[in-house]
Amino acid sequence: MSEPEADLDREATANRLMQRLSGFAQGIGLSGTDARQIIGRVIASDPSAGDGELMAKARTWMLIALG
Image (cartoon, rainbow, N blue to C red; front, side, top):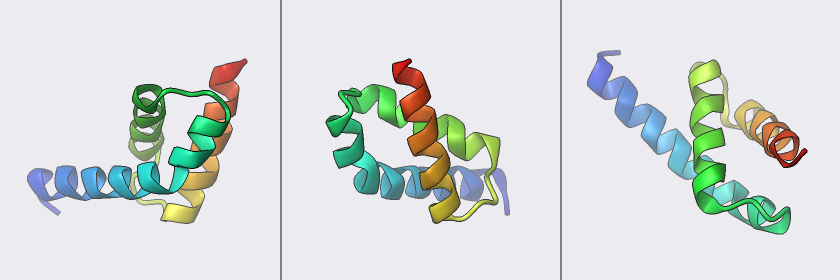
């Protein structure tokens, strides 16, 4: 996959995860900006992971960020 395609794929993944995790993030009092940053870092840490694995990791990282 070329770099522009990879960037588009990461952006699409980030948008999907943000949509799915927005209620969770709001529920724990995390801003949308912070949630999007965490999701971006999660995707960067393991770009080949599936949505389910990325969502689980993002939830964990969001909870850690509150600490």
